[in-house]
Image 1: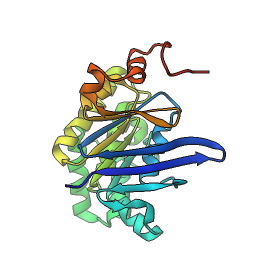
Image 2: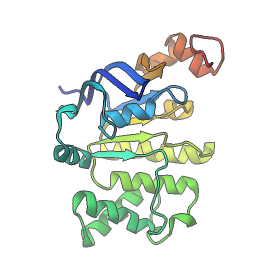
Image 3: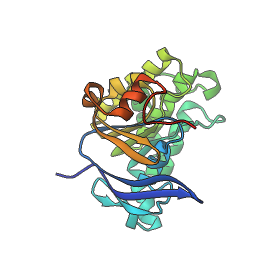
Image 4: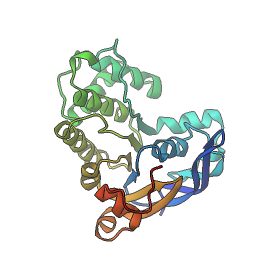
Length: 250
């Protein structure tokens, strides 16, 4: 048995603002939702777990690897095995869909030529967008761009996937398409997925374990179903979207 992610006593601050404090958890399921209102450090948490941001202190293990002790070259090796979809999910505007994916295949995995083109077709198929290889990002809708970014993220054969607010800025129908793609990928790839979101529909569909962040700490860690059934004062307030409760917005 090996936990997918283990975090012990993690702290992260920016100058004198503490964003994450005393964060500890162990994830053994294949999906984790990180929820909480805007500005509670959700993105910071996933970026710190993979050391795109440096923690102040604490221990982090991903797939059994002690991430905190890695030297720079070892960290770059680790990153090859991690798929990370940034919130902006930005594609290169000046490259076609295919060129966008070829770029990461070559740079991350050194895959080129026919093998790379075959992989492009495979991943576009996986997100339900075959035959758009030659389109430019500007010709695609927001939802299609997000799904291409998702295809690009999985093209490099990651062992774990981090998705930062994958549905932000999308209307409910488009959002549903993106989430369906994510769930489909989870089935095909059989790898753990960590999703930062505050969209309740996304949570319902992805399910799994949940971490709720508030005031720089974890205020809930458990199963999503259980959170809906009972949860605690924090999760109830968050899900109902009401102002009464322990979460105070000053």
